[in-house]
Length: 219
Image 1 (tube, rainbow, N blue to C red):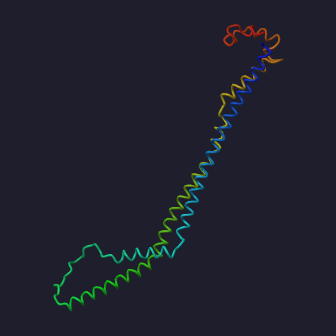
Image 2: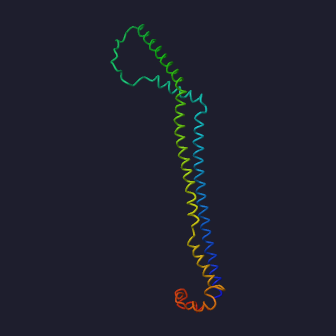
């Protein structure tokens, strides 16, 4: 049976190395796939921020109208703060003529106030929209910088992840090397073949492996 041992050892070595290579290949594929997914996520986030930034400058007339309406409503709203000094009011008149003139004056004053509020809203709308867009663009620039840093960090650790993945299956690879060396020692011209093999076959170092008989039982 001794001539068959080299073949068994070599077959085991091939099988062990095949398992090791498969584990390393799968680990490498997993690392590369994870990196591609991370980079795609970074790209998607960057594209979304750029699209949102560009959208802030579209339909400016419509946005200005909406902003002007909001500002006009704010400017024309009555103040909720108490006056600094008490307002002296005159007794309510019972004359229809006086009451009519007062109502007319109040309506005219309100109309003028509303008109000023509308004009001020139109005047302020463009600046407010640009100011809001500039602030949001600054925030987007900071987020883009953060995404860029994370992208570079992911790329920087990729070589270490690939190196770790290549080491997968090292135990199987070591077993393959041991089996390959054992097959070479048992093969023709090996140190366990021929006359030297006779002495080593009975050596006590092989007893635990071959049921206490050394290699003598297989010669």
